[in-house]
Image (spheres, rainbow, N blue to C red):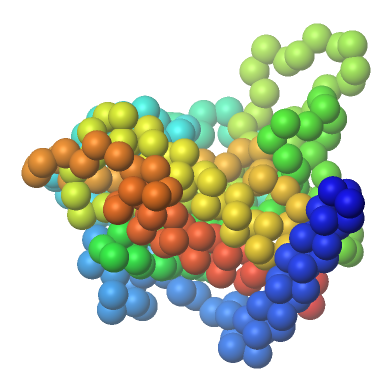
Length: 283
């Protein structure tokens, strides 16, 4: 009975995903939805900029946040917790091989006038297909490429492609021959589901960590709702930004006031980005 219930739940998710993807296709969901086109983007006013990559001219999303922000992130540049003044989400080619992505991201940011400490994320996904959502003052921007994905707690094996038709991987995971020594320095793999969230309130250090967990839970829920049997890709990244000034909010779990808003915003943006990816890759 329990196995049947699991299969029924999966079938229901797949049916919802098919209907949502069909609706997204009819609505022309493949267009660019970066926050500069959204009048409700008060905090995350990201700009579409370009940079030169080995693959040619590539787009990037740049948020000039300015002073007064605390950010927590798993990003390759500016990761950790502390004051940050900008966020860059740069698209690179599928065959990206540079071993210094932090330096590369710094160079891109500096070319666009960014100084001081910031957060730099990298992806092979199409950033112009990023999705934006807002809920109760919390804003989320998500870019998603889901060619290589799986469940976090899986046996040691290469991530699988869960699309119903064969498609090239959105990133190229580093693999080694079984039994061989791991390389001393592996080429970085661009993140594929990048989440940036901004809250108009201050969060305690514990609540900042809590917000990262809530955003991740919402991402997994959205991927399931989009029909992907996975918790994410091997290289997902997240950045949560909160105000420095003001009374600190102590909780950011999914049932707290600000955590629930964050969860809904991330879920909505991730679902839209994931469905857009599915429509494009399977059409």
